[in-house]
Image (cartoon, rainbow over all chains, first blue to last red; front, side, top):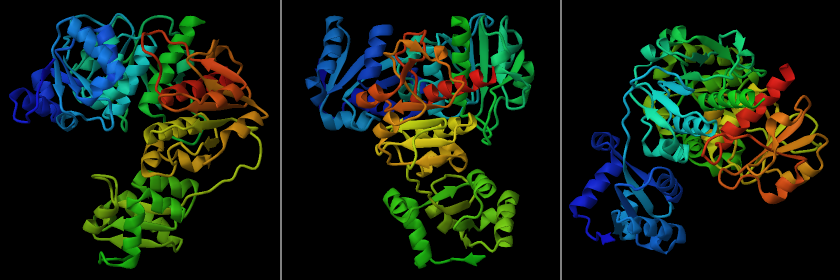
Length: 261
Length: 261
């Protein structure tokens, strides 16, 4: 394990820049996974990070010591930081001091939709995007396609909300959703408060692509008109709609229910 | 409409104190609804606020003008503030400058559970609590009982996430959930990753009380053991669990589906 003790160290300065700027993370094609749970899950599902950064005091934590031990056995890069330097980089308050620097996978769409997938059109809130990724992974959906206006999936907030779902999903970003929907070989379902067909009346025992939209405006009209189905989740109350992440969970698990029936 | 122009005005100072301190809001038994949507919904469902506060520039917004017009027709208190003073009070960035000061209802549990309800045990995140309230209202559930450790329902973050659901719900806070569960006259269902009965295999065509717990630890063991049913939402992926708000949405709308079948 290499130890950095100076704030002026070039590698430390680069790390701090990456931690503080989403633009820097996008440009570098790298992001930081902060905390034991995300690091453990990455290690288990994706393998070695580019680098592991650990705070001095976290080395006494048995889970962190285990992670570091696994990495050093594989000759991976581990960098130790005094707590003050570590805390200036970490976005997590009162967290356990371990993070992974990883490459963010960049995927290019090359084939039409043919297995169950989630399409996010301009979903703004990182917490919502993270929750949708987590629910999709729990429902056994593997593909996620995001429009340019959707929150960046590899941002720290989305990563935290998704609790490791990223590492079992194939995530495509900056996707032009219209040709994907119109060229789909499977049913494309958009939820809409104006639809007349109930979610529960659609046969979901086959792959489907779920299309969700902006928190306020929903799925854009041009995309909505391309979807093969518009469905509504029946509401009983006087409240106008569900949160988009709640809506997605209801849809995904209605598909699970039908497939298990 | 009364106009305040000085930061030293006693009423303005009180308002600013209330906006900045959750302790002050609890002590006063009052909260602030920030933004057009919450104010409109309150007006429609609950009636007149204690006071309406509006920024100078927002008076040109037709929706705000309509709200102010309705209030003045009923001789309700409307206070105008210069934008700089308004923005120092508002928690919403780039919002439309209107807020209501309202009394927060305080309810005391006097009867056993007999209609469908939601019980929140130590749910920490205001966004999760708000999303659960919104989903419950959309599913036609009216009663919500929160343990002392659950996020305060009338905080600005919970209010924003619930999008007006508060005004169709009966919310009980600081509730000792154990006697409520053990004395329930209806089924009490807790979700647990360790349960063996699937959610889909429980007959939900009758009132049930849903019990959800802490984001990390779930429902506390002593409460879990009091619930009449422990149910699991079947997971297909390698991801360990759903977000608690996603989990609640799946449960509520499975009940809606069964009731409509």
